[in-house]
Every structure is written in structure tokens, then in C-alpha cells.
Image 1: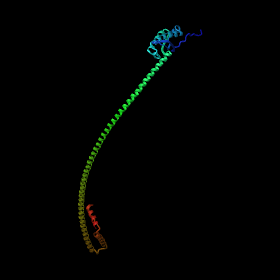
Image 2: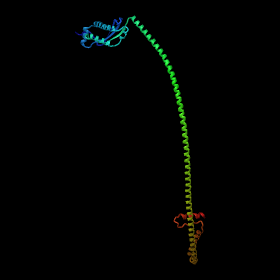
Image 3: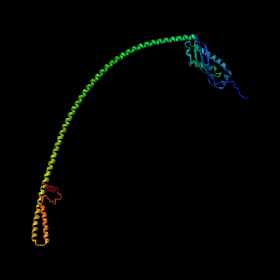
Image 4: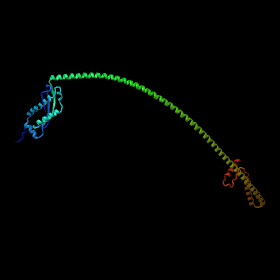
Amino acid sequence: MPYTKIQFLVTQQNFQFDLPVRNCPTIDNIYIQIEVSIILRVRPGEDNVKNFCYKTSVNQLNEQLDAAISERIRVLARSKTHKEAYSIRGKKTNQSQTLCAYMNGLFESKGIEIRSIIITDVILDAQIANQMEEKTLYASKNTLERKQQCFELRVINDEQEYNQRKERMKQERESEVLRCSKMIAEVEQKVRKIEADTQKIIAEINEKAHAEVAKVDAQSELEAQEIISETKMIRASIMADGRALYNKLFSESDAYVIKKNAQAQEVASKMVAEEVKIRGQAEAELSKNLASRRHFDEEMAKLGVLQDLANNDHLSIFGDHKDSLLAQLATFRMLGAK
């Protein structure tokens, strides 16, 4: 054959089976309708696929699921009152897990795996639902009224408590203000006392400082006077030493001048004697030749020079004093005196 025939095409994905279970009696004999949603799939594996295709058809699966789940749902509804019926919606409880395990036990040999069973809705009779709604509204209204009363009572209590607390806090504040005022007065009194003590201490310190300053000034003045006295004494001593040295030098210079004057007189006398001698010799040799006359005139000229030097009161003759300070001082004094 040029082709292969496929009899069944089976998906491996999950698929959903919705089933309404009607006329489920509750424990108080109220009939309700429960909407159930089953999530299932064909188990993986060749044997499971063959079991599903050849042992269970789609139509048979629907009927078997309807029968099995309806029985367990009615048992579940029988355990609840109609007031509790809404509590089984949309919850994965132990009962749903038990139901899922029960269904897997039934359909395992058929190659079907039940993944999840969920009750999507619970439908009551319209009249009963209205009655329950009215009861719920009434209960809610009563609850609201009670809560409103509780709220109003709470507001009253809170207001009373607020007023009491406000009054108490006002009293506490007044008490605290009084206490703080008392504390402030005590602190101000302490501050004034501290300021007075501080001023007293400052006055004592200033007085001691003035006394110390006066003492230091007096001591400084005394020391200054002593220094001035010592300075005057030293100055007087230096002046006395200077005067003594001056007088000594003056005396030495006078002695030196007298000595030099005597020496000059002696030299002048010798020169006069030499002049006389030369005159005598000149007169004795007057008759000699003109050369002797010129020699005589020359010698006379020299004597005239010496005579002029001797007669010159402003002339000082420096002898072999070997740079003596006393000799020079005496010479300068002579020049100054003349």
C-alpha cells in the first residue's frame, strides 16, 4: 500500500472536562447544582494509549467520568448544609485530593490520568438563594448597625477619654510649668550668687594684681635708683680717673716742654759760642784769601739761620724722642699756648 492509515490521533496535552452535577441533596435536604471541572490527560506510554483507544472510547469516557464524579460530588454535598455549600467552591482541599486519587484509581487501567478536580460553582434554588441573600443582607445590616453603635460608643468613649486626657495633660503641663518656673528661679538665684562670687573674686584678684603691680613698680624704681646711683658712681670714678690721667699727662707734657726748652737754650748757647769762635777765627783769618771770606760768609749765613730759628717763638724742635706720646703732646701744647 502506498500509504499508512492512522485510526486514532491522541494528544499528549491536558484537556478539560466540565460536568454539571444536578440535584445534589445537602444534609438539610436542599437540592443544589455543583459545577465541576476535571483536568485530565492520556497517560504517556504505548500501552496506555492502546488501552484508551481500544478499551475506552470518547463517549464511554464521558459517561464513565459523569457517573464516577457525580457519585462522589453527591457524597460531598451530603456532608454540607445549604448554607455551607458555597464554601466548597474553588478550593483544593484534602477532599479534592482524595477525590482525585479515587478517580485515578478507577481510570488508571483505562490509560487516563486525572490531574486536578475543581468545583467551579455552586448553584442554589433561586428562592433559597434570595432568602440567603436577604439573611446575609440582614445579618450584614445588623452587623453594620452593631458596628455603628460600637463606633458611636467608641467615639463617645474616645471623646471622654480625650477630654480626660486633655485635662490631665493640662494639669500636668501647669504642674510642669510651675516646676520649671521654680527651677528657673532657683537657677537664676544660683546664677546671681555665682555672678556675685565671681565679681568678688575678680575684685580680690584685681586688688592683688594692683598690689603686686605697685610692689613691682616700687621694686623697679628702687632698682632703677640703685642702677642710676651705681651709674653715677661709675661715671664719677671714670671722670676722676680721666682727670687724674689728664693732670698726669699735662704735668708730663709741661716737664717735657721745660726739658726741651732747656735743651734748646743749651743748643742756642753752643751755637752762640760757636759763632763767637767762628767770628774770632774769621777775624784772625780776615786777611786770608777770598775763599776763606766766602766760607766765613757762608758760616755766618748759617748762624743767621740758626739765630732766626732760635728767635722764632712759633717753631718747635723735635728731637730724638722716638715717637714719644708725651713729647708730642707737650709740643702741641706749646704750640697751642703760643
